[in-house]
Length: 414
Image (cartoon, rainbow, N blue to C red; front, top):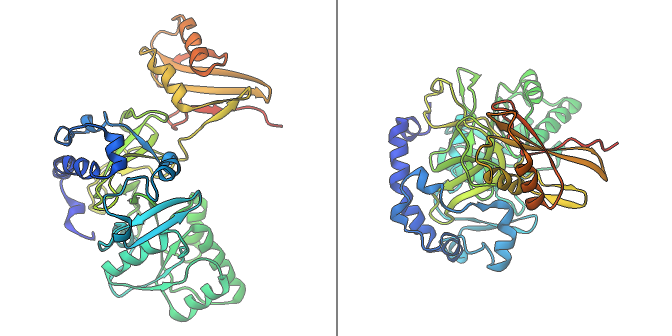
């Protein structure tokens, strides 16, 4: 079952709808002073295809603090005045995040529904209610679905167990590590929390071993959601007949790009890269917003058995910012990308740093067609761009791993 019919649209219908709405989103964004500066004199009417969108500048999540310091509180990126919003959040940094007044503003009802939350259900919300939005993402989504929430927050493990034992919720929502703590405390207390059969987990990695631990200890249906404090729900896992379906389904209000880390250049479908989002949001539009997360589009798979037809991604695969220090100087993924850009004959590249601190070797591994080609020009470009000496190793196309790494720090730190 799906939350609504939008989730089961034909992919071509969804794509046409997104592209038809894209010029309006660009026009809306340009009413915000921050986006007006970033987008410049771009004509919204001309941004109606993915190719046109890919020509716009990328705005990085890592830049939000500086943008917000220049134009408080949101860097001029919101199209609704701050005092007309429902809530303002503050994450460490500080980074300020907005919430508008629309129902399920964070679009979190889809992940909840996919995890098994239904009208009349009882949900124990164990995300923090303090300054950050995760708990309120759950609250607004639960209200839309029509289930009841226990606003448990984080911490106070014994009280969490007591609430579960006496109120008998059917669903836990929160981090995986905190759920494990609660379950271990319940065992220690001899408390029965077996009513909890569904768990929607987020904000932390969920290793397969931990997922299996939950199943082995009575949580029959474990799903993950991928969300952020700026973009809201991004993607989520689904189940069919109790079985987890491959990948995570993209939210209906998002245009996803996977780009080469350090650039805004989309990678071939299936290749690991940085997640870049364009989000249709009436109060906080995002245009080519680079999250800093790595993922990849799931390819060569049949339609999801759950009936949802949107793009599926592999989930969170790590961080794209692989900046490292070599011989006292920072080397950034964007610099590696610039070296590759200046030599169009190169395919995928990876900078590998080996040796020990103060005795490092920096080698750029480059996929090429001709392994006997001279590499002197590439060596010179590395020196010019990074101000450091670097070696070059030519490798066959397709031989570098598909893991999104642009810089691999393989030094011996012992």
